[in-house]
Length: 93
Image (cartoon, rainbow, N blue to C red; front, side, top):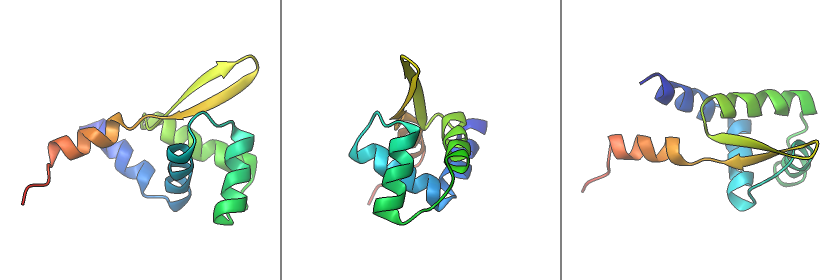
């Protein structure tokens, strides 16, 4: 599954995992809000362009979906690709 490879690649980066952590806490964040939360909560001092590139990788893996509200781009978590992984390899004990 090519899409699953995209998910693993997206999750391999700690900054991208931190972005997802923030979207779990509060869905529907703007780029500005994500950058601010990464700085204040995680101490990640990246440029908006770098965070935007991370978001593009997450969006390509379908872990983040975007929508426009006026001129503002809103980012929402999509956990379906993660469920597909756990469905493929269910934990049984």
